[in-house]
Length: 168
Image (cartoon, rainbow, N blue to C red; front, side, top):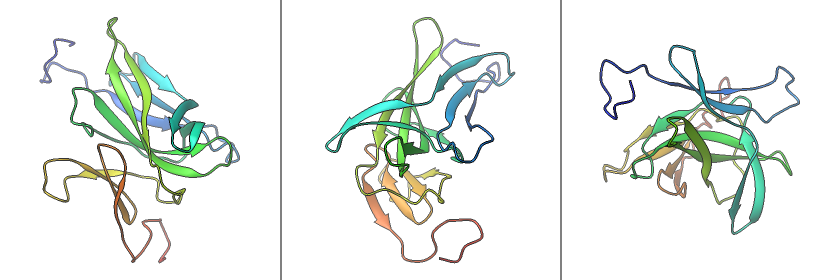
């Protein structure tokens, strides 16, 4: 209802990655849609992100799932998703910041991209939990966990890869 409180009067939003049916097109779009389907609050495809590696364009991986939480412990909500880099097609864990605009809409910015080596595109559905019990959230992709605040890798498991139908 837009009063700043989350209660039974609110219509929950839907966050989803949508993509072209052509599997050769690996970049999708992340969308925030009103729960009643009446409004697309925000949509983002290729966004630039700058870190020590340089400035690159990223889009949501076309098969990516999403996890929505307050990862950075600020007021805004983040959306964890796997992104694909335009220059080479490599995937990376990432988070988008969803910010309420003055006009009542939502803007999406690419807040963090995992600064390490490219990540397996197959483990593309994030989960969020406070696994370490320190009061901050971690983002889990397959057998790896990342700090929610900056997506630095906390651990990388040795068993399985979190990919459907595969033992490795």
